[in-house]
Amino acid sequence: MDAVEAVMRDKGYAAVSARSVAERAGLNYQLVFYYFQGMDDLLLATYRRRTQRVLDGLEQALASDRPLHAFWEASSEPLDAALTMEFLGLSNHNEIIGAETIRFGEFMRRLVAEKLSEKFPQNTPEASVFTPLATSLVLANVGAIIGLENTLGISGGHAAVRDLVGWCLERLEPPAKGASSVGA
View 1 (cartoon, rainbow, N blue to C red):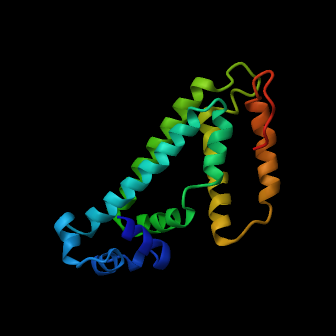
View 2: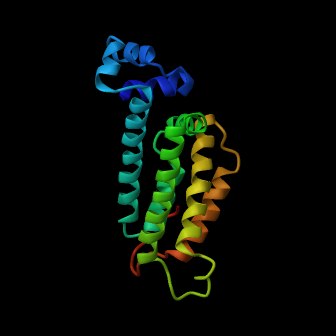
View 3: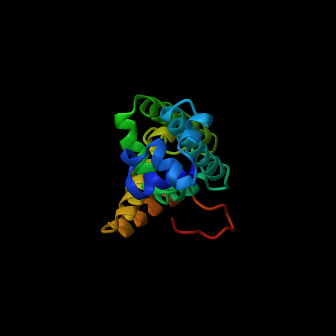
């Protein structure tokens, strides 16, 4: 699975084959089929391992004292954005990975909305607009774009967006009394 990720990062998802993976891992390509029934099984196992790492990081962020801030940081500094782009591209061409992407994406949205609703400001005039689901989608998607653009070398406007998001987060999730405010 490490070899699959390495090939995807270096040459793109279209270059992933039993031979390219085995070569990268220093193995005979027949061994790929000893451990996995086919390439779809290997790709799915690799993708699930990756999504588990993303989920672990997200759960850690959501368990923090300031989950909105931590969620923003996790979203705007995504784990291995180049690999994410490759899996997203693959999901457009591989029905199994596409279905897993939808399943994982919907699961993550429900999880984040549920976890944030436990700590989200309820008694504010903005509560009907700044719902946990809407806020998490904005943070996740704006953060993902910033992370993906950083991977490509694009950074124009990112500092201003980070300042804007930080300003909003300070209003939605101010520091505890006596704690210092940390920028987003």
